[in-house]
Length: 271
Image 1 (tube, helix red, strand yellow):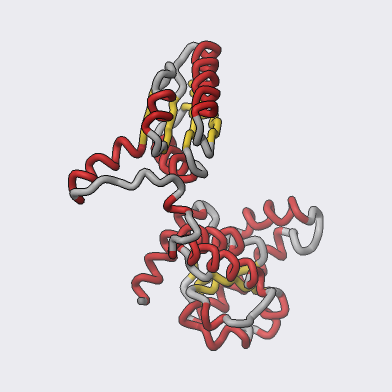
Image 2: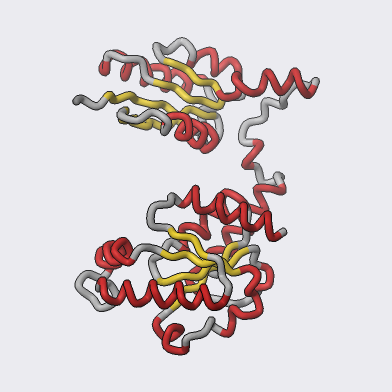
């Protein structure tokens, strides 16, 4: 069976993150189709718009099927140029702004990049959260842990770092993470520096077989990556978290996005 292939243009007068995030969510619902993304961020001039128009039409002719264009464009003149292309358009601003204007009784500002600007308090909070996550990655520092919104614990390579960074970037959470190491299991108690923050701790675990595959890519044929050691560390970590009353989540078959949302739900319950 031949897999259908479609080219998708993500076009924006800003970073394009909004268009790509929403577009990916929509397209992921269609199985059996291979989507090839092409990105045109910072499209803020007529020259760039016409260059993009030519590229869309070139792809349409070459592939014999209309590409999909998912766009956020605040300039109506540039948007009109793009709409001349032979493509299927999903204009996110057209789809959502007009109904919001009607509901709110006012016109939108047509200011590009407004959601990412430095004057936006949410933007500043996100940058501060990312800096915190990087400074408190993998137990590098325990300074100012009292300011953390969440502290993830688990064995090495169980997904703590990417989850911490995603929580900071997507939800502006100050997320720290701390690795549980063999010395912790030998002492058989939670690291002392974490005990004052027990109410902020959440654990991550993973199937030993999956952990073995991940570690073996990094340090092949080592004791660290051996299946036997992975089984020991996972079992010891889960035993410790169970005894300490730390709720944990299995990352084996969960995406970072799913895991982050589940953690957010738990934090909301706590708050």
